[in-house]
Every structure is written in C-alpha cells, then in structure tokens.
Length: 144
Image 1 (cartoon, helix red, strand yellow):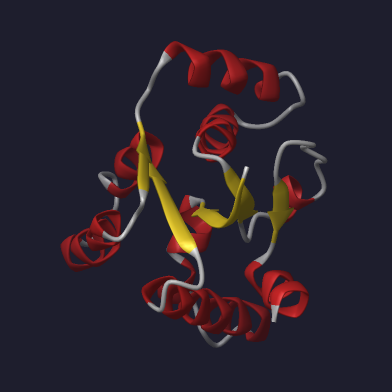
Image 2 (cartoon, helix red, strand yellow; image 1 turned 60 degrees about the vertical axis):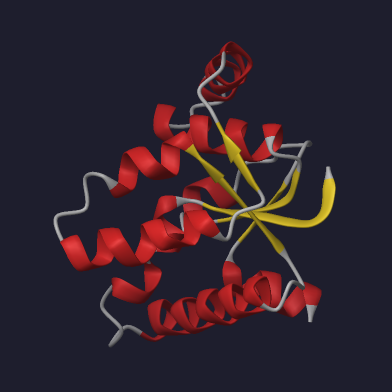
C-alpha cells in the first residue's frame, strides 16, 4: 500500500456530472473536485485502470469522456487486466459485490492504493481489509 495513493471508481469520477440540486450529491461533487485539485498539487497520487477506461468508454457524452479520460495522464500507475486482478475480482464478487465494482477494487488494491473513493453506499458497507473504502466527503473529514 502506498500512502496517499487513491483510486476513484466510476460513480465518484462522474459525481460532478450528477444532479447538483441534491445536497449530498453537490457536497460529494465539491469534495471530489477538491481531492482532484490535491492530486494536481501532488498531495495525493492517482491510480488508474483498464476498468476506468472501460466504463468511461460507455459514457454517452463525448465531452465528459474526454474530460474524465484526461485524468489518466495524471495517474502514477495504470493497472492492466492481468490474471491476478481477475482472481481477486472473483474473490471480491463472492462477497456479493457487483463484478465491475469487484474489478475496480481489485485494481485499486493491485495499484497499492491506500484509499478507494466511491459514492456507492452499498460498497461503503463492505469491509475490504486491503484498502480503505471511503466516500469523498468522509475522506476530506478524515484526511484534512
């Protein structure tokens, strides 16, 4: 695990594009954007993966695809779909985690991330010993 290395799952990456009239969504979006700024300031390292690329490819908005994909250039590590990831993903899926989410988590673990940032409340209820599963707002409360 690398101190201060983080991984955003797809729902967290896209939070600023969600309905900002909902207060918790707006606060999570602001928190996520603040964390991105801290990545640019080198306070945190960003990890990327083939799963992020895969999910971004399905975004129906081309401007969002481009904006999100540009963060790949900032990432210090980019995880490929190797057998180790697929095995860990299956193990995590056995904990009733959706397969895509399980693969994201497996990628974050492989990348040596300390934090897995998500806005998915179901994922936040699952204990994964290898990584800190955390909402962007709680991340700010804990780390700043």
